[in-house]
Amino acid sequence: MNDLFLRGGRVVDPASGLDALRDVLIRDGRVASIGEHLDPGGADVFDAEGAVVAPGFIDMHVHLREPGQTHKETIATGSAAAVAGGFTAVACMPNTEPALDSPALIAEVLRLARAAGLARVHPIAAITRARAGKELAPYWRLHDAGAVAFSDDGFSVSNPRVLRQAALYARDVPGVFISHCEDGDLKGDAVMNESARSFELGLAGSPGLAEDVGVARDILIGGDTHKPFHIAHLSTAMSAELVRFGRAQGIAVTCEVTPHHLLLADDRFDGFSADAKVNPPLRVANDIAALRAAVRDGTIDAFATDHAPHTREEKAQLLADAPVGFTGLETAVGAYASALPDLPLERFVALLSTNPARILGVPGGTLAIGAAADVTIFAERPWRVDAAAFHSLGKNTPFDGATFARRAIATIVGGAFVMRDGIVAAAVAA
Ligand SMILES: [Zn+2]
Image 1 (cartoon, rainbow, N blue to C red):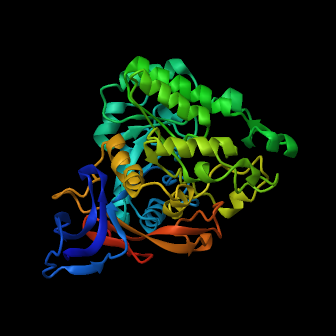
Image 2: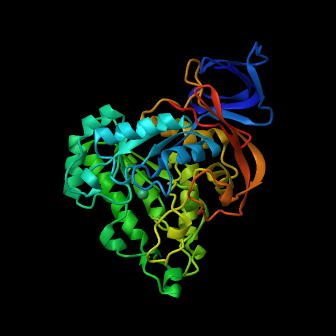
Image 3: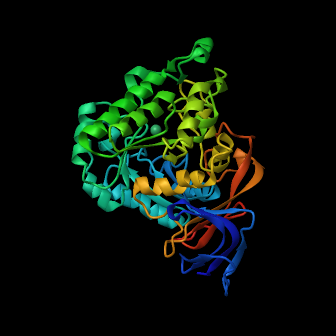
C-alpha cells in the first residue's frame, strides 16, 4: 500500500479539538503524523488546499437489502454508494430477508462487505426473531458475531413488555437499542403525515403523535432498564423535546435526524407520486424548524440518512402500494449542508463521524495519530444531483435535480482511496 500525503487541507477533528490548516501523512494505513509543512517523503500527494479533511463519515442508518432483496441494493452497490457519498463506514439495518437475527447471517454480511472492499459495514442485528416482535434474539451471540447494535427498524417493537424484557436481557451486551418510533395503531394505513395537506388530498395520514408516543415510551423503557437507547430518524418537534426531557431525568438516550426531515415538508405530496413516501413521514414547517434548532443546540447527536433503496418500478406503484423510503447516501453531505449552511464545521463533522462512532462503539471518528486512516475530504463545490448516475441501485430521491453547495471529493478507508473526485475504486476482493 502506498503512503498518502494530504497537503494543506483544513483538518477538522472534533475528537482531538483540532481545526487548523495541516498536512496529514498516512503510513501503512494509519494516521502517522499531522502538522505544518511536513515532508511527504515518497508518499502519493493529494492536494487538499481549500478542502476540509475530516475523520471518515459514518452513516449509522442504512438499508443494504442483502440478503434477500438484491434487486433493490446489494452490499457491494450500497458500499459503492457509501464511499461515493463520502462515507467510510455504514451500519446496516436488519430488515433483510431473512432478518439479521442469527450469528450466521451477521457473518455473511461481514463476508460480503469484505468482498466488496469499499466501505466498512457494521451490521445491526434484530431485537426480536424475524423482527416479529415476539421472541428475543440471542444478543450475546449476535454481538460475538459482529453486530454493533440492535433494532427491529421498519417497525417499533409493538409490545412494551417484550421490549422491556429484551432491554433487560441485552443490558450488559455492548450495542445500543435503536428505536424506530411509530405506534402502529395510531399510524394505521397512513401513506403520509396527517395534516392540512393530507385532508386536502383525502389521504390517510399518520399524526405526529404516532411518533411522539413511541419516542416517549422507548425513552422511559430505556430509563427503566438502564439499556442505552438511540432514537432513529426524529421527525417531530415533540420528539426532540422528549429527548431533552429524558436526558434531564438522567436517561441515556441519543438520537439522529435524516436530511429529508430537515429539508422537506408534506407539501411535497401531489396525491399520486410515492417519491416522497417515507416512514416517519415528511412533516410540516414547524417540525423542520424545531429539528434544525435541535441540531444547533446539541439535542441531536447524529446525522443518519435512512438510505432505503427500491426499484423505480416499486416506487412507481399506486401510493398505497409503493414501499417507503428512498436512497440517501450519495446526497447526504450536500443535503445536510443545505439544511444547515451556517452550522459550524466542527459540529458538522461531529454529527457525521465522531458521534456515530461513539454511539455505535465502532473504530473511527478520529484522526488521532495511530488511528486507522479513514478520512473524508469535502469541499464547497456546487453540484447538481443526478439520480440516474447513482452507484446505488435505488434511483429514487426527492432531491433529484437539486443543486447542493457541498460535496465529498475523496474518501479514504484504511489508508487507500476508495473514492477520488467522484470516481469509486474498483472493488478489491477479500
Ligand atoms: Zn426506521
